[in-house]
Length: 251
Image (cartoon, rainbow, N blue to C red; front, top):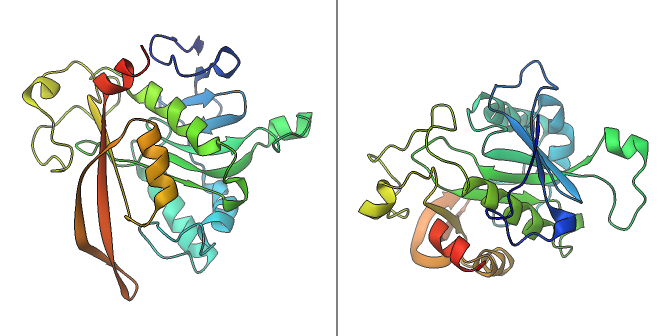
């Protein structure tokens, strides 16, 4: 079944960028609630083990991984293990997706390209509740083309449209919440799956911070020396976007 995106949930997207949501029935491993989201330029879909080779080209690049929460992948085995962890998660293809480009920017979309969209990154909420944290990584070759903006805008509109009970094993749990989510009593009573979504990054990651703020995220705090990556301590900047603000800014 293919559903046209409701513009009441996604008014930021122009008519020619209106996504399609499709239940994923192409894989024998697909869970009943897995979906594929398609926009004009990209497809957001569940991860597959075969994605490891393409992902390794992204996650072994030092510049791409500069502000990621782990070191660049030293070998393909590390990326395969990382993909395997995605496959074990109930979020794969539900709130966590591979970003696949339909064709090279400005190129002609051919039949072979339709069959094999290029993997250029990952976006999503990758932990089951009570986490509300969204994360993303994009192949450095595709920076500066508004692709991260398109992926995040599409995903946020989808996530903010979900009501509680939609996603398997992710009913809202009011205990053990990330302290940076800071849900109010009203938000905890909300019928929506995600009354607020958070993100965090290294304070030096100006590009990602600028993108998140453009989408409406606001800073909620920062922690110095929050974790150690290799031989270096990292600081963390926390940001938050409420469903109410997302919808209000579209009016």
